[in-house]
Amino acid sequence: MPVIDDPVSMIRCTNKVYLHELMGQAGIAMPPSRILSSATDLDEAAEAIGFPIVVKIPDGSFSRGVKKADNPTEFKALATGWLKETDLLIAQKFMPTEFDWRVGILGGEPLFVCQYTMARNHWQIVRHRDGARALEGGFRPFRLADAPERMLDIAARAAQRIGDGLYGVDIKQTPDGYYLIEINDNPNLEHGVEDAGEKDEVWVKLARWFIERIEA
Image 1 (cartoon, rainbow, N blue to C red):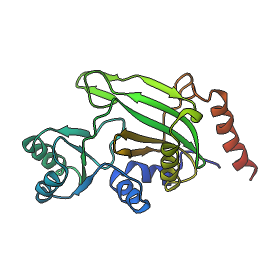
Image 2: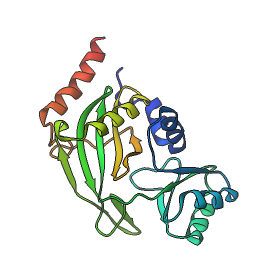
Image 3: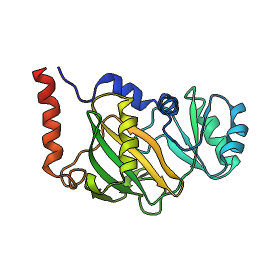
Image 4: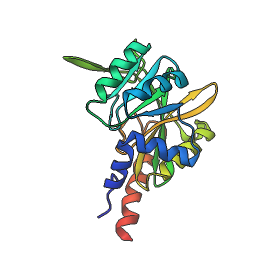
């Protein structure tokens, strides 16, 4: 049975440590990072990356398990607390931007492009609040023809390292270039949002992906 969100892709995408190593081998730029396995790694990571610093658990998603530390005290408290629950963490350079690019990749080829803007007064697309509804930023869909070609190439090369299904590749655009943030194995695909640039062609390509594999 053809499955577009296959188990292997899920395992690869949801492990940020694995993803970091895989993209490094492929020569795809990610924000400067360090893998943390104990409290002894914190000083070296802080010196190499600087502050603010972003700390991620290996299997976080939807902006959960991702926090920012503005100084060594916050960094130590956050990292040591999480290391009691997980064997590894990623410490990553903070790259503030007004939006993140999301490139949808299907079967190794770009399917859609959208910009997600940061939640109001926050540094992430989604702002989680204890006991309250999460706040989300806005979106700006693009036609593939209007998106930066270099970025589309990076997204396609990154997704091809994961598999042949549907992926959402998140990329930051900075004055120094494009940096891959993560690859999502189950990206949002909502009518009027991600499909607003390419319109029906998104759904035609999606249906064709299944038909070709069923017939094969």
